[in-house]
Length: 337
Image (cartoon, rainbow, N blue to C red; front, side, top):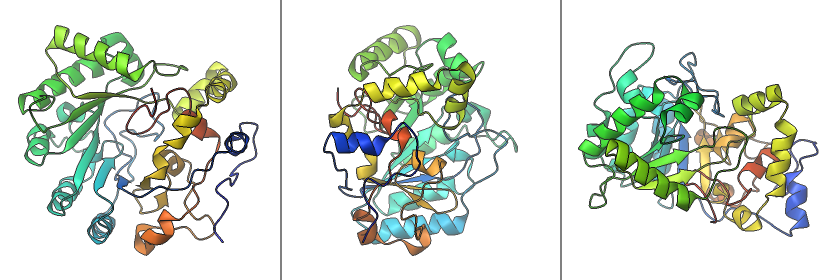
């Protein structure tokens, strides 16, 4: 028998499973339509809110054998129609271009979690240029999803580092020049908003209008959609909250804002997350906490079993309150306005 869907991973006072029971909510997988693959923890930035703890000093990255195994999974399982490549800065993996090209040959929709500045910064260790990326993305019709904490320099640089906003603006213009963000184009450019601090995101719909208005007025930049994502109380952001003495206040804020509708739409119900070394998780956040699926006998891409995975019990813990607070939070933004 599979583990209980209300399996409690750690004993703490922020009991997500108890909240599910109180609301008579059961959250089995609905499907597996997206394979989200973290190909490297290396990044040209070290953002304060990064739950991955990515930085230029990280060296972990997916090798070609594991990349090929992910491609084999995509080929053999037609139900998985989307490849979502993330990092770190995923473009810093030496097999990144290969991964994109081969997935497109399989007819998969490819999304990339792109931080914008890597276009201009290139590889922080080797100096390899990444200025070709806008053209590469356009030629392969890759959906580009990029973080931009705010449409003003001060707030963006506060979260992501000095000079990041201007580099992001320059990179967005480069993407616009090859057709991204144009409503008449099939080249999708989405932006991601994270609050700067211990707050829940404002309305995704209203923020999107503000971003579109301000970015066009001040920089003549276009994009398609804005996704609001709640800062997860793990790793770097959790450490920041603890230093400020606000961790418990933030957790209470998330718990008090629990939304059953958002819980019903959490991304782990239709997604699998793969780490750079091929391990499988319910989501990217579980991956960063090393909470693998099937804790009694962990599964990897090398013993992948679609039918077993689609019937698995999702593992929840206290950080899941971040995905279910207010309008909810997922890799695709708010779940319920």
